[in-house]
Length: 355
Image (cartoon, rainbow, N blue to C red; front, side, top):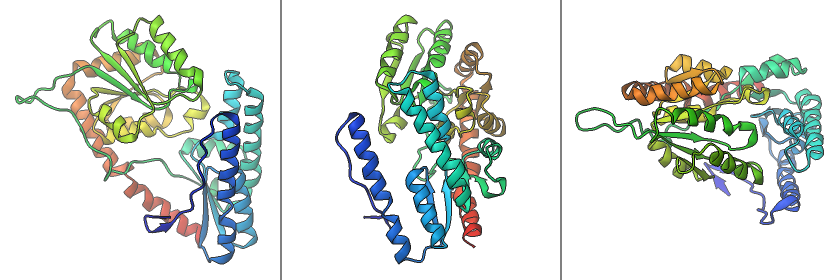
């Protein structure tokens, strides 16, 4: 098929659910990925780029090396470390298999891909620092952060009354994964504290769960905290539907659990909130703290429930401050985090690697 004037090969879909379905999907994906091998023999490409594909990526990069083609690997998340961390929690169905998966991915990436690839693209400076300590050459790594497509991301800001004042509906929105590793308990406990000052506040959680039991656990906690009727969980939504909910938000939340696998990453939802002109409350995650400090688009607090609730309370009580922070965020993203800016950096480095 054609996509943005490029030829795209799409693997077959799998309808079957469960473990067998995942295995079949993996095999189909692998076979589809291997279509690149004959393509490399028939065409004179300047560079092979692989993103977040470890087994097929290793084979493709090795093949490119044999053909004397340049190659680059783009890793957007510490997959190996994440698998090992989740396995250590023993809250998944097969922790032993997940632990083995983590070790296999780690071996393939650190001992094979990182050695063979001509360049490695990472998400953040912190990820580069950690990977360097694990043996990846600093000189062959470049941080490329996530951004937003400003042409297709709507700006909402805040609606004003005819007299110019702002009416806060006290709608608090979180958009992101509801998996255990994201510790949604923190948001719910913070919201419980906020409700002592704003009894009519509403919390909307937009996102899906990683495991079947995640939603049940969240529903049970909501009942225990007596937040029934004040918290809505939408489940996974198409992007446009999620954005419509963000449009009605007075404050958007970006709490990132202070664990290594999240501290290395990039707070993508923070940038999306800012692009849409919403004031944000986030915690002192390295990259998030830097962005909020530079942009003045929100309030950054320690990862503690009371300061987090107090920051939301401050924005609800000072709507003009929220409006200004929303404007600051949109301006910052337009100047620093739009894909039109990021792609220039990415292209420049690819041209260096390709020679």
